[in-house]
Length: 492
Image (tube, rainbow, N blue to C red; front, side, top):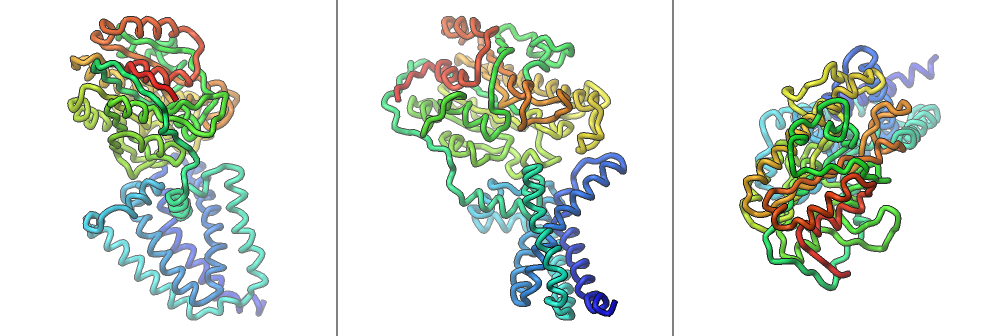
């Protein structure tokens, strides 16, 4: 009993220390999470405790050496607080893109974000830090070391246990996402791109292609593909639209699917290097622009960077944000780019139907109810999940129709190509979402629309593509299709 009493100051200090870290740092990752009901909140509270237990192990080992704790913890605490403020106030996601912006932005621009609320938050963090350091002086950090050693090591090992069961559960939350973001930013991309192709030929006719790269849309939930709900009434009314009902991909998550779609990478054959569709277009003197509503991932950012122009909408909020901009934010930059040149390949990268579904469309598109009300999937009914998902398809119908209406006003022959990177599981075999095995994931939506001007000028292209509409095709088709639509031939 006497031994336990002697350890009491140390125990109380670490409880206080971890409580402060939860309030100022780790709690920010959960603040905007939509939850409904006591059970859902309890599940995520336990998740927070699990995450914080790993932090607790790190904090304990930091505390064993006084100067390391006073200097190391102080620097890390204030640094992480500077990120958590934006996670609390604006639901900003810590990604490699955010790290890049911080490290490469001019100092005068950085000063513009130092607002009064930010200054007050950091001042409060500094005051709490001073209080913690004073309390730290009153304890003997190494007292009870042998008793604390095994629990602290188990806390650290818990990180690998959780990440092995569900990758990203810890890495995508503060403070670990800061470390992961910095690591990814400074790492070398694995994808090797070729630029030494021998010859590129293109007809001199002006053509505009808008390539819409969708997210998490399965073909069988489009009304125009025979789905029992009229989820795509606007697209169904378009006379020059072809839908490929039987598109196949073996890549069921963005990091693998997008690089394959945007290059000459084959689903069934690996090569040492690949060619970006934008490199070919640039060589053919076609202006290329990427307008994205997703943060750039390491897997495909080198491909995106082969565009002449890159515009990221809502750049500092990833798919993990619950206050992400709607895809219609892509339309304004599209309007400005469309006017600039006659020969263009414009890519619109949507956030699409990525989970959390309720953040992917506005209230006016909430056609099917009841909808999901919690991020904790097991607490949602199948009806809620599918209703919310189908509402995102209803919104997609509006978005793609908006793109088509813009292209109808173009005098230049124009085409819109839409392909989703992969599908989504909606309860099949009790599974949901994506990045796992499932047939529904392997059949994403794929649409091609032609303007009247393009149909008249290139009837052979239209006829050839129409002939494949009912056939089984793979995403290997997308890369050569884009080049064909632009009348580009190339030789490696």
